[in-house]
Amino acid sequence: MSVLSERDIIGELGRGILFHPLKPGSIKACSLCLTASEYAYALGQKRRLTIQTEPKKNKPSEEQKFFLIPPRDTALVWTDESIWLSSYLYCPIYSRVGLVSQGIGHIGTRVNPCWSGVLCIALHNLSDEEIRINVRDINEPIAYLMVDRLASKSSTNSNIDISARLDVLRGRSNTNEIYDFFNERDNRWMTGDTALLRKLMQDSDEYKKLKIGIHQILLLRLGADPMTRWTAIAAIAALLTAIITAIQVFKPSSPSSPGSPPTPTPATQAEPTQTVTPLKPSEFDSHA
Image (cartoon, rainbow, N blue to C red; front, side, top):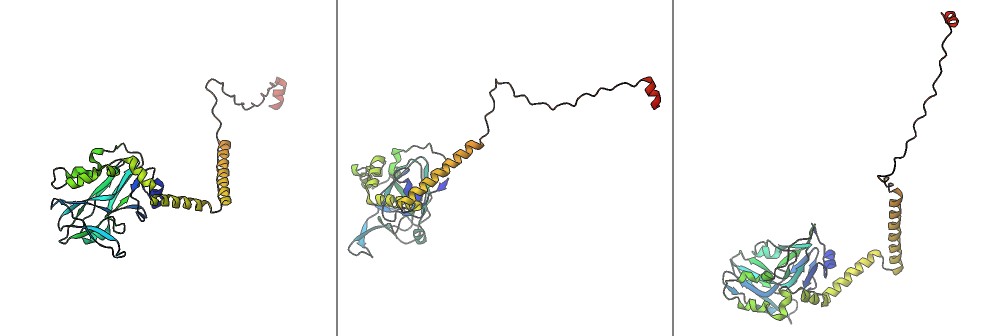
């Protein structure tokens, strides 16, 4: 298992990852930023949290939407972003330090392979004060999504019955408005329509910008000048050819077939036999 960097994540967009809407700053370091949508449900108060607005601090002409999580309550917050993962990717979700420091409890959940849809994240307000959550604010995400590449593909299949995790609202009061929003035809990309999710992502300006940027990085690694790039490619091809040739040269010969007779090994030549001439009796006596 290995964690993907921002370049790896961009490279997987359109292949192993679908993510929409992509915003400037959605991909940071080695994570995807998750922002809050307008749909959040307070478990303690059993109601959808009210959306409020105020002028943005840096752009007074624009409005910033937000909601407040009541003290000592848990809010189910649906993300503004929808994601699909292939069978070889998995995503743990991590808390944002800024929210935790205000009193939001740590997040401990994940996105399984083959998931498609928005995410429902439980934010626990452990403090005695209301905690503000900005809507669609990429500068203040509610969580970070890391991407891990699995050592082997998962056999998990997507489950439309729990798409967008609307099942967590079953049996709870005042939930019709949330159900109706996610069940609208135009919002199918939020609840498992992978084809529509792919189209919306690939048609977005931010996706095109990210893909052009990663292509430029790859080209820069090979050199900005076209002649330099072709020279580098030719050098790589020549190196591969040399490696293949060396393998063929040093490759051991194949053993002989089972039916072929063994090759005789030449034996060492024996020394010639010396003939011993017996001594005559007269000669024997002379040596005695």
